[in-house]
Image: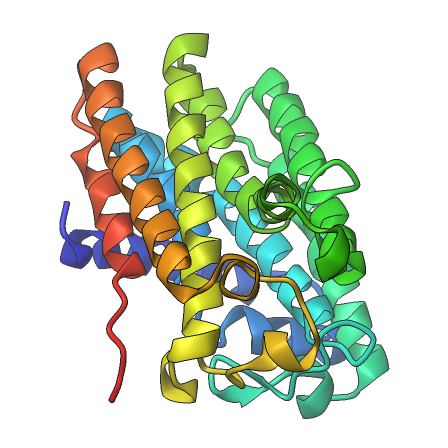
Length: 297
């Protein structure tokens, strides 16, 4: 599946999200900051990854995964709103636009994030296309990936990390939680919704783990050698915050090697997944195209 096909799935997701937001009963003053960040031009990699994995099983599975895909994007969006706050990364720009707390105010941004986080679980719990057991499994998996055992734990470790106490294993563990866990949830959700066996499920998770690591390494590289027009936010922000990143810890050349290693591991997993399941998962290779380093001169 090419980027064009992935964009088609993204359009399916965007249409479903617009329909969902059209009929919510949320008061407008709460809904405005939520929509501002939800509709602020994200690539939708996490929900589209889930839908792509489901499409490899059957096109009928895509519809069953839409509410869970929305919940995943709600969680991701809340995390970005909170990451940008003055107490965290203190960013003024996100995707080329003012961050939520700059567009509105800090208290409103916090509450918009809180609302998205909470509403995400309601989306899954009320999804009538899924069985009760699937809903329970998905809520458990999302709480583990997003909460104190997953993304939030990684965010805290990232804030507290000190270069003189860092090892490569620790750095990888931080980013596997902070960035990787939501990609892993996409894989687990696809397995739950598609009712895959444990063997196929593990291969999906392995792909998501390699992609998540590669995605974080790619982001770290772009912060150093990319431009604001590429990233949609300030570059060299990690250095200003004295954050430990792959380039700051192992250098630019070794970081580029690490990126390629993860990309190749992800490609190998796609081949294995297709062989083991007898289904065509080559669509997942399209996600690796997002990791190209097109550096502007």
